[in-house]
Image (cartoon, rainbow, N blue to C red; front, top):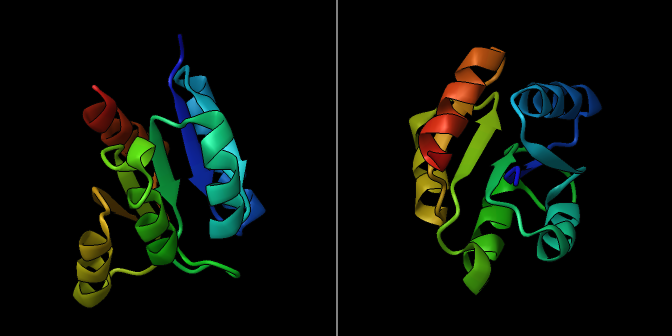
Length: 121
């Protein structure tokens, strides 16, 4: 059975690119438009991994990670930040919230898949 990966990003073009890349590699994808949407969809879809943007309306990526980590089902899933932010302080904040990894946009599909395969085995 294909593993489900959730992607949360307020940019439709980024969601499409991430989704297309992951689907081509055989993963199921659940798309969310922001942190609140992702939290709402997570319980129903039980993703094996989350790829989230940092800067989103309603609930940003850091807040989303904190909320996901607070749920027993999502305490240990890999969570990767996919963002334009590359400052060490932001990375530290993401790590403190529970992020597993960090990819800076723009990204290439091979880089994304390498991270996903490494984290999901």
